[in-house]
Image (cartoon, rainbow, N blue to C red; front, side):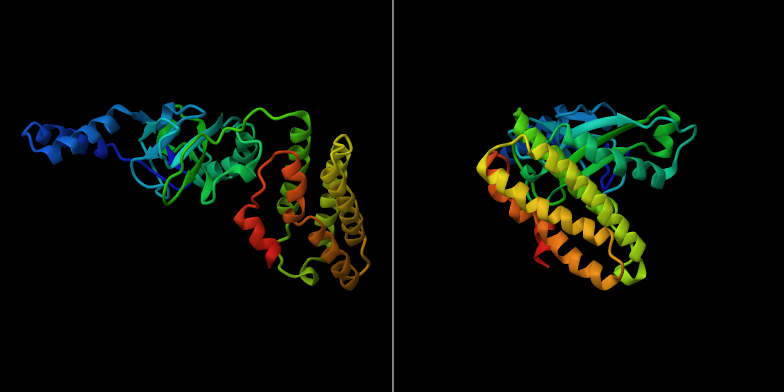
Length: 292
């Protein structure tokens, strides 16, 4: 099974066996090391049998390419990753190739992960979405599973990432907000300038405007003060996105787009999020985009 950036080798288990044998000589340091190795060996689990919610440490590195087993640990212990969901690749008569498998995982893992982590702002800094997916060899044995995980390339984190039960207002807000930003980036034209793909940028603006209308509709049911203020701000942003979508020339587009893009700056949602008792730390990547 390949990982969206990591592998594991069974040789690490063999190394543990050696440590256990040496530990019998009585050297205190080696005994402690052997005990640690034994504990790790007992916790080993095949990547083919990972379950949603498992917290783990890779035997190789988070950014390697193949893995056979991982160390499963209690989530309150320091760990590098947690499995947040899984699905099976279906409808493929033959192995789609590494590129095909990763494309499927790229498309499905974010939605799968949201069922486990409703508010992605609560994910610790440096923890990103990865996944284990079938290799051409494991595919031949019937492997079709993709395990979606949040993992930290360097360092560790503690505690489960699973969201606590959320109320109706929290769920309504998150559903609309997630769809809004997903629509923005999913429709981002490849051309860096509007002049090089005017139609593409107008198409993006139209899609974002539609997503904002849906978000606004869901916010109408939330009558808390800061959320009401946010809804007013987003209504203005929605109008700007619609003007950008119908712009007759690039100059008109730029004027509308500036208001539209700044109107959905995530930092402006913090007071409403605080009021709704959701995470309030803007993810670093988002903060950088709107700060620029």
